[in-house]
Length: 85
Image (cartoon, rainbow, N blue to C red; front, side):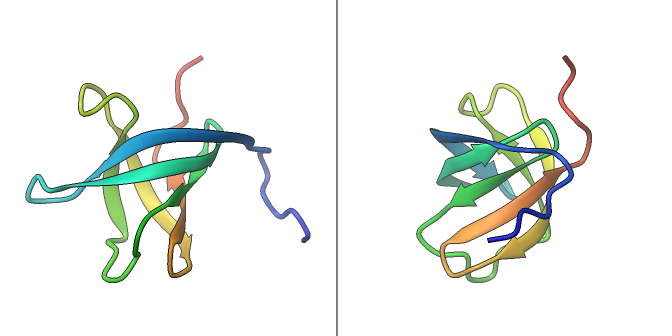
């Protein structure tokens, strides 16, 4: 598969939570990660929102995410602002 990302990602297997408007949360697995985006694995991506918050520490800090692509169980997201170094 041809890699089209501008920034390489690191493969990880880490749990995270997706926080939707209305304060509902969905558990997911982070499959890969960079300062600019991530691939998230879920049970289902039906009716998945275009924007949401992602937390790696059960809701203490959040990353604003924008949906880039999706399959039945995976979503690719870009972070609204890169993480500070």
